[in-house]
Length: 327
Image (tube, rainbow, N blue to C red; front, side):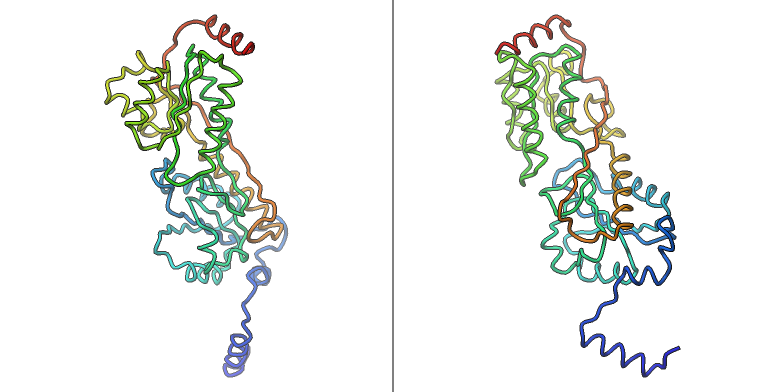
């Protein structure tokens, strides 16, 4: 026991010297890591930043899976829903003094601006899923190239030959947009003969008039849309789906859009891999920004839906592939 006067004098000196307690040493002193396998309810924080503008990943899309996986490993996770008005400095101090060891980020965060008051170096950090621009963190996210190739392959199996990619671009530049566009161009050049290639739509994602004008101009047999919203826009314009035009979406919310053919991002596996990676970082004492950020890519899942139908025959696809190999 230390006398109150002595304790106050030490605390005043510490403040004058700019001393801050080390959370790692504090956790060790609290025997949170008695052995490499002893987690003992170590605190974690799940920081839900605002989702991407007009994005398909809603608040909480990963939250339940992150909580479940963190608890299964013995951690004590807490969810923090943030917004533009969040006091980053206050949040940092709260997490720091609660001896939080690891942070999972969902949504879109400006690490540089937010980090002016939030010291990332105090925590192990993993970015879960989508983002605007790459951050200096280890990231677990969907495999964009695999997703584009998967939906294309499924539509080819149905017999479609003139497949148009209506992927579009977000109002703010995104690496995901570049990956989708590059994958579509590469796949068309590799697998479709020139007569079957449709120029990729790269206008604004939300500009349905431009997207519909693109469909009317190039008349694809089927469209790979960015979102299910494009399906409803095409329906409103009078397109008969799937009899007149096949449609599949890169992003399907299974609970609401299960009727639509396309891809479901594997939220459960993305969350699981995020927690496993965070656990590894905590145990190896790796904190803050990563000198060589890893990107763990998780495949998306195919949802058959009802917006595609089997057309043509196998011979048509064979002829298209043979022609493509000669051009």
